[in-house]
Image (tube, rainbow, N blue to C red):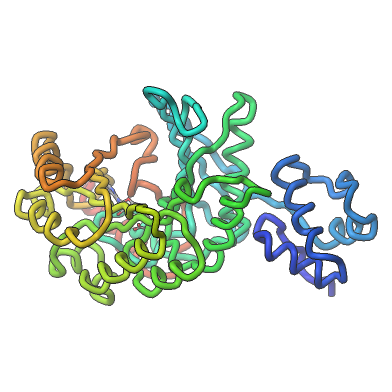
Length: 376
Ligand code: SAH
């Protein structure tokens, strides 16, 4: 039987180098190949003329550059795009591209547009945060590194005719990145690599609901930006909203956060994400406790007004309450951004990504029963 074909989009620089060494060739061939794939964007091995002919033939027989298949693509009134992508086992995951005008002098290289790509890391999610619709779909498995990188390749191909490219990647789509550690690490390595996408470490962000061992591991192996989905300043409330808190309570999570920020050095900050839910975590007492809790941490805060989905049982706070919450944090000295809702007319906003998951847990059917009951 033939060995399975290797998807090259899943191998970072050291992976490609190892692949060549195993074929009895020098490691630098890996870097050459990387440039063909990402700088020249070639997919035909025969055209990679500086690789030995035997190697090109070997690649043709043993390697592939398969991308997730585009099942559908929608564009929101505000320019946000959402793709539904089919991954190899027939499930569908979502990714979202968010274009933004940069005001003032533009970005670090003078660019006038930011294109943020929100990629998925898993098919569904195991964590079941009470206010997130992805969790309600249940879970089917991890995405491969190739399927994660493939999302970026697809988005860049979409932007290419307009002379634009993805400038920022956030692993804030479906899934918990730190529970798919190895694939996420390879994929983010490729995103940062100068031989590939060359995105700055500050422009690749992993977001976690608080998988503490994953944060310590991450500090050992990478320097990407880290966002923590906090959502509550008290353990009791956080247990309810983000159930993984029962395993890794706030004190342990904050220790891990401090460790990660220290490992980054150079005055970089963590991002704290806080979804504001009416009457649940949006009161002044929550803002004060949050300010107190985060005191020892170098961080900035992103507030996300709750995005509704059917039968969630939660509501978005009033604009007044949102601003009040933000003001309290700013007065305590925190840089506090309010994330504007983008793409909600096509269900592309935070927490609205659902894809189509063949659930391996029983969560999806329980949720659908609730939606049905609410509608009747
Ligand atoms: N599992 C990772 C990656 C998902 S990121 C994590 O939890 O960080 C998606 C972000 O959107 C998280 O901060 C999540 O808590 C937030 N979110 C989820 N559902 C939401 C909703 N309905 N409204 C607003 N934000 C939501």
